[in-house]
Length: 85
Image (tube, rainbow, N blue to C red):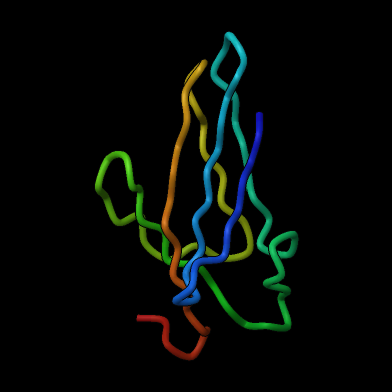
């Protein structure tokens, strides 16, 4: 499994999971690892770019099972805790 994270010019993030293996694998990204500590009080609103679905706001960690030889690509908006719906 490979995880790629890129900060975009407008402040959004692009996150991609790549499974190079022969079996489905669960992959996760911990927000702490991408610079969003608990003290930042920020969450991420995930949009699935392949399936064109809004996955809603995720807190602290996001996990997904990726099919064998597959990928998942997301565009994420940073959502301060005070702006949660």
